[in-house]
Image (cartoon, rainbow, N blue to C red; front, side, top):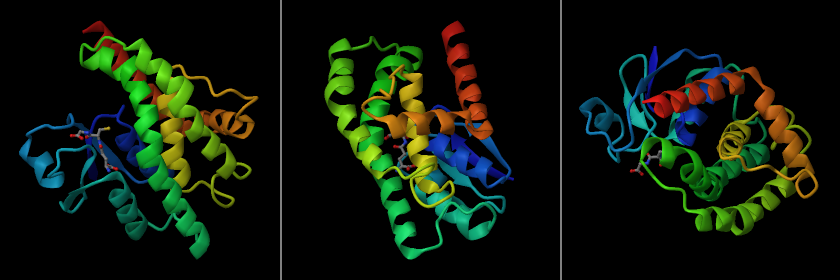
Length: 217
Ligand SMILES: N[C@@H](CCC(=O)N[C@@H](CS)C(=O)NCC(=O)O)C(=O)O
């Protein structure tokens, strides 16, 4: 069975877990924190970033986008890459946008309000939260609203764009950021639908268990 090295609340680990769940591929999660010196982890992830990954035949590498590309090559069910060249390019672009610009701002708020206080003894910086909520996150949501089709970001079925962007929306959910359904009606509806998927509910439940353990330790 493949091993994901990382921590469930990481947006990039979450993305890889969701991809496995969607493609119905077995995996185990081995808890490794970012920056760990664990030699098995460093062999998979020389930069010390999570997720690292070890395939069921022992091949090790890292990066959520690379892991999903590998999954698509090795398993043909529930494809996360759209068929047409244009849709494929669009899905990869939205994955990239989510992994960079969207994560930069959503993970910053998630760190301020959840990850920092629970795991790093961090005191919430309210001025930074205000800046994120009022100035930095809204333009990202404006862009996503403009790109959203009906039920999915690309085509008629879930793709790597949804797994990636949906994961970013979970950051906002954990951080108590409400997506205003007047300003972002499609995205607000999309978030509700995405979060109601069983595979997403399971991910959120695992993450909440970790939060509760951290609270009580
Ligand atoms: N491009 C990488 C980014 C992974 C990443 O930045 N992970 C964060 C945790 S959410 C990390 O390990 N940060 C530690 C560091 O940057 O040293 C991916 O898609 O997997």
